Image (cartoon, rainbow, N blue to C red; front, side):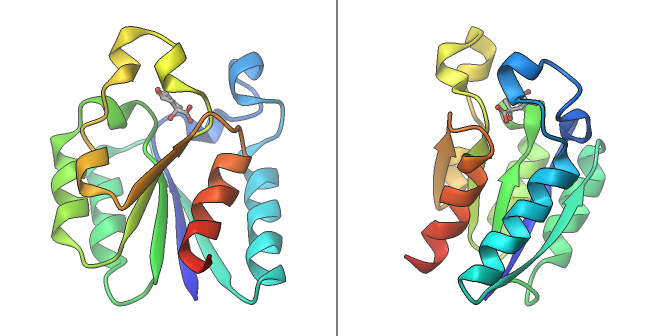
Length: 140
Ligand code: DQA
């Protein structure tokens, strides 16, 4: 299978921002590990990140027919972007929502996701392993 690992706003700063929350590894390092993980299991993946809401929607639109599944960490967009929610609902590719941190143990505004309802499932709180568990959900 072929997956798209899609990261939203501020995730490009992973490894440099709030290391106590998101760890010290860069997004590139995490993505390299995720690609190796996919390959170990006979799959492959593409990776993308954007800080722009409309661009994230376009990347979701473009995924139709190209991927078997999408692992999405939309960052703060998660909590308020109806545009991203509608983009997920508009495509046929299953999307698993991911968060590295346990958003429910953090500020109140992070307790709400406007995306979960249109996603296949959600994995959160396991750092970079949240992405691995989400990928694994497609082949288990
Ligand atoms: C995050 C959690 C969000 O609340 C936050 O805005 C992020 C990262 C996570 O991976 O834990 O940017 O999605």
